[in-house]
Image (tube, rainbow, N blue to C red; front, side, top):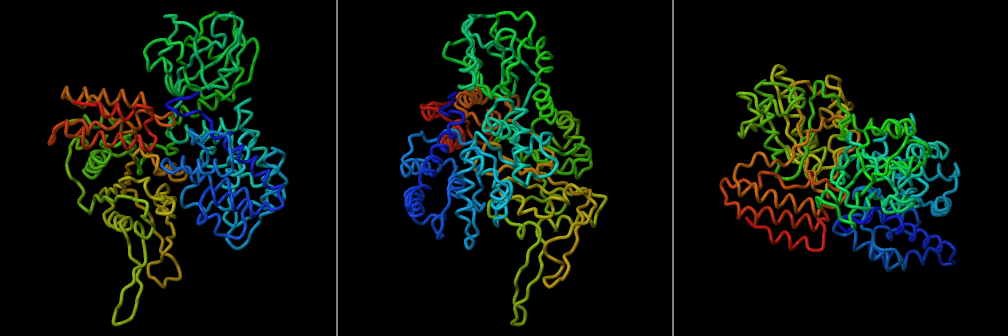
Length: 638
């Protein structure tokens, strides 16, 4: 289904056709030189992949996947389309494994090459045949190739036969093997076990579901709707259309159908007569947006089970779409694994906090720009240091805490004092040596000396250890703009296991033979802020996410008291809902309420110099889409 110019899974035929071209190139007597020429046309003669004497097809596809960026991606893929004479359209759906810019995308170390091994792996994977143990193990043994990288590459080679073993899929942890599948047989069993849950679904459909739920962009609800595939109440089954176009629809404007109710994250139970034919999750409802029936509209659905089961329903009636409370248990009896997975995701709240709110010490406030995340972080810091409560108490009932008489959470004050409360802002160049501890050089008496220097985090740890009866708070603004595993290093473990010593990378002195141990005390709180609208910055990875509780800070209309501000907010909200790209949630990108406050600046000025530039940035980044979206932004007025 096409939504806001994006066709789900259209990256698949692009990669498949490119794979066909690579297979044809293998048969050429001038294989290597011909491939180098094509890669030069696609990426440029100075591209990284051509700086080495050998090239291989696995590196080609993984290198291309790394070019999946909002601004440059379409141009790069257009160049590949021309260079390899592809007929497939340039993808609009970019939801496939994308190595970060810092990831080594090539399958060699620059000195040792495994070209024939990788051609063999590519050829077997293209056919979808069982992977030979020797080939799989040989590829996994290449320096710089871990299990996630190898399985992501296999998925790109053949997205109809393989699945990645990475953080996205680990999110569906109850279906994961106890140990990493580091053999071809174990990997095959892992793929098959997941596909059994997602019966008759393609691996690329499973990958999208894993990505959306892992990133928090799709949150499973308790609402279920029963939809009939005989759209016009005749003996014609439109199941094939529903599956191929990833949607459901009704055939008439019957007022008894609750067609405007299904919302993102709701469950669709599909039937034909008394036969169950599938289960899906709502992504987008065009009837809901329009507020009425339109024969060209439909409900976008991500299918997660397409297995047919006869005689599931008793005495089914004709209505095309109804509430499914009376039918849910019947489906559950026949699709137990699917319902178990949905219930598991629902219980986790789809935020993947993976951290008990008991005794919360680490918290990330996430939301769109302008929703007050940094302000709330400062208020929470004062709330904690004045001993009015704990993060556990606040997270359990944030509204109740902010409305308590005398609560400093409701105050708007500058609380960063550099002692009990400190603030640091992360950025892409930020490192472990900037945040934790580094080595500095100094000339003393004409000689160069090197000293270990504690940075922001170790400084506040030391102060918190000296005053164990007082609360200390470190605010990390824009926490996900940095390479978090590299910046935190061994502190990832220490953040969760408070009171346990952890050995640091650098010792107490530059010439130490043994690294100094550090223990993060229980009176130190870490509060991060995270912008949910920026696709160019990384998501918090699985290991770090498990150490933090997550609290959504949404854009709120109810805090605006001025009519002009409220009216403008609603117009912008309508534009965002209408033009939002499908891989974003409206709530994650709606400009925060602070943009609509006129205090200190006229609202019209805010619109022209703050709100509109932000919306135009959304358009450039692919967050807002549509043919006339720029005109709609330009037409906004107070």
